[in-house]
Image (cartoon, protein in one colour):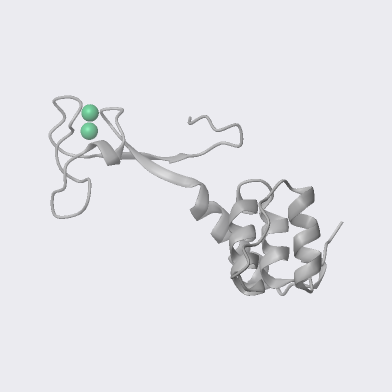
Length: 125
Ligand SMILES: [Zn+2]
Ligand SMILES: [Zn+2]
């Protein structure tokens, strides 16, 4: 069912239901909307987009929906895996960040094999 978050009050009510924090005193509606939406990306990407634009998915333009999907995919990619089975973040810098030798084994150069995505239960593939 599509949901609408047209104002600050509707956002605050939803944040309580979703176990998200309360807005800070200095926080504007727009700031809170963005931060709540980022939090929801990993829980429910459709609702995250509804929070961000304030309208239910049935009233979003196709472009807004595609942007929402792209945002949620990007948010869930946390690292990249090398052929040596270690992560890019464990490799030294060479031309680009993390493209050098591995800090954990004898691998001499990062060779991309997969994106590592954060799963809903917090485990990695
Ligand atoms: Zn490696
Ligand atoms: Zn390695």
